[in-house]
Image (cartoon, rainbow, N blue to C red; front, side, top):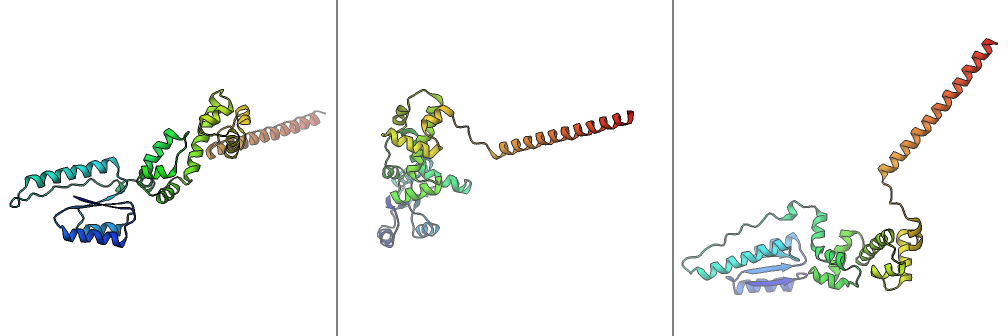
Amino acid sequence: MICMHYDRPDASGLSLLLDIKRAAPSIPITMLTVQHSEELAVWAFRSGVWEYLLLPLSPSERNHYLQAVRELCQIRSCSSPDNKQLLSRTPNLPESVRLTAQYQRQQPLQGAIQYIEEHFREHIEQKAMAERCGMTPFRFSRLFKQTYKVGFLEFILTKRMENAEQLLRNSQMPITSIAYAVGFQDPSYFARAFKQHFGSCPSDFRQEGVPPPRSATTQQAENQTIQQSSSTQSTMIRSGDCHMAFASLIGERRT
């Protein structure tokens, strides 16, 4: 088995694959690539590539590929030139057929997201997360922004702010200790970042509290209640006016 890894396939690299295939046509070739397009996949299979894999691999894809390689090795070790056996390959239905585009974008980043969830209090390098996901830093940064609508550093900052909010609401820890606990080395910078994120400094937030944002449904219900209350009050006033006018009319007739 010959495995050829491409980050961004170019003409020279793909020409090398063709040369190897011509020189050793009986040796299967696996093409692993970070950059993907339908045209590239079609070209690979037309060129005689045995398997085309898009990096990073999911656990199920990796296990399926390794199982196919083991079966291939077993067949080649047991078969003779006069008794050739064919490898029965029944690939699973691609998840991309039934999953949303958002889910497909999130999948390659799951290794980084899981690491951030567990280590957001520590210093995390974007380059290290790109390597964890099998990507270049440029592609990782672009895909991260496309998927989560914020940059890598802003995502980590938001995780720290959310954790700080919980500690301010549910503990009596000093604000300085909270700053260090969520990953800040400078409490004054933490206070500025917190105020920019929530609109109030940590001490005011703890003393006054910040109610959770109301949904549009809740706001609409409140508006309807106010309108109904105003309508009822207006009806009562009109009814009172009529009652006073009727009483005045009865008094005039009795007089």
